[in-house]
Every structure is written in structure tokens, then in C-alpha cells.
Amino acid sequence: MPLTMSDLIHPTAVIGPDVDLAPDVQVGPFTILEGHVKVGSGTVIEGHASLTGPIELGRDNVVGHGAVLGKAPQHRGYRGEETWVRAGNNNHFREHVTVHRGTVQGRGETKIGDRNLFMVGAHVGHDAVIGNDCTLVNGTLLAGHVELADQCILSGYAAVQQRVRIGRLAMLGGLCSTTKDVPPFILQQGYNSVSGLNIVGLRRSGMPPASIDALRVSFRILYKEGRSQSAALDRIEADFGTIPEVVEFITFIRNSVIGINPVRDGARVRRTY
Image 1 (tube, one colour):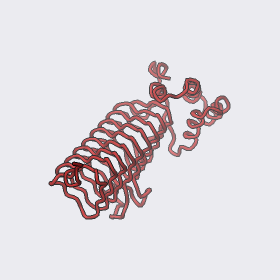
Image 2 (spheres, helix red, strand yellow):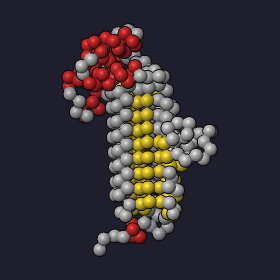
Image 3 (cartoon, one colour):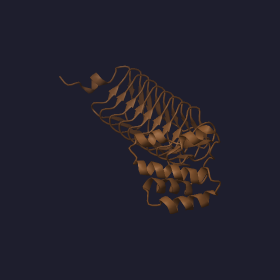
Image 4 (spheres, one colour):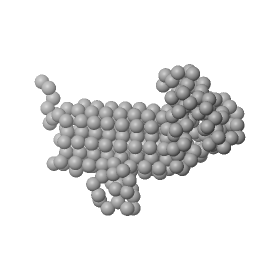
């Protein structure tokens, strides 16, 4: 016989009257779902998790043990306004992950795409925007208004200041922190320090070798030849302006409001770019 909703929801779970669960959603013991909560088909919510609306999750998500999604933003100006967390499909929020709602001072929502992995204890602050296929390793901290493009990797206990943007396929090393934007395809380590291109990530993504080679040269022009940023970007555009990945790199930097970090000197830089 097919399982019924009563079979899938543990009797100790607390489900509020405004909660809308697809028929096959599984809810573990001592879980609390309250407020306007909408959860799509195939999602599993493990024990002791907490979802507080307004929040909408798509299909086939996993909310791990003790995860807390949709609580009020940690913002002194928040006065109980209706703001949201919205997440897509196939995301995995591991144990004790926290995701806070948006603010009326910001976007009004915290937005998460598809197929992201949030490892143990990661935190996503209010009004953050996360793309698709990102990995936030244990203890990663995203402040409010942070933006992550697709396929970013933030290693263990990386910390990102509010309003920072991180470009596609960028990577922050373990214990890394940044107060400035991180361009696409860049590897950062330590504090506000570029160390090279994310070569391993670019190769794994299937990026054409010609594009990777163009990015290598672009990196050298921008970071190693002593040019001003505007002059370096003009040179890169003149040399490689027909390559989409290079255009993405240039456009991101030109659109930065808070600027990007400098490169770190040393042998490791020469090896990674």
C-alpha cells in the first residue's frame, strides 16, 4: 500500500495551520513548521528542524537535522514585516544550517536557486542571493545581501562581508575572508587576497581549454603587469573580447561598486595561474 501523509509525518512534529506540504513530503520527529510554509514534492525534513514562514521550498530538497530556515533577519531595523525565504529544487541543507529571511530595507527575500549544498553549520544571512550548484562547506558565513553566482565553492569557515558579490566558479579557501568582490573564476585565500585562478574548478566544469588559456593571460595582465585596473581591462578586452568567459570576467569587475582584492605575492601565485 502507498504511504499516506500520516505515515510520512512523525507524530511529534508540530505543523501549523498555514503550512502547505506536498503529499509525499517527509517530516521527522520534533520538527516545527509554522507560518506560511510551502514545501514541494519529494522533500525530506529531518528531525528537530525548524521552518518559519513565509518560506517556500521547491521539490526534492533535504532539510537536515536541526536546520533552521526562515527565521527573522538579524537586522536592527527589522520590525516584523512580511519577508521571505525562497529556494528552488534539489538543495541540501545539512545539520544546523541557518537561512534568514530578507528585509524591507533589502530585497524583501533571501533567494536560493537549485542543487546547492550547504554543509554543517553554514549560515546564509538576510537578502542573500545564491545561484545554482554552489557548495558552502562547514561553518561558512554569508552576511546580509551577499550574492553568489553559479558553481561557487566556499571552503570551511570562509566568511563573506555584507554586500559582497562572488562570481561564477570562484573559490574561497578554508578560513578565507573577503570584504570585497571576488571576480568569476578566481581563487582567494587568506584575508582579502587573490592567489590565482580556480584552474581545477574550471577544468571540472568543462570549460574549453582555449578559454582557460585566455583567462590565464587575462589574470596576468590584470594582476601581474602593474597596469591600472581600467587600463588592464581595456587591454584584456582588446585581446580576448570575443571569448565569453573573458567578457564575463571583465563585466563583473567593471560593475563592482566596492572593488576587488589584490593578488598575493609569492611562488604559490605563479603556480596557480
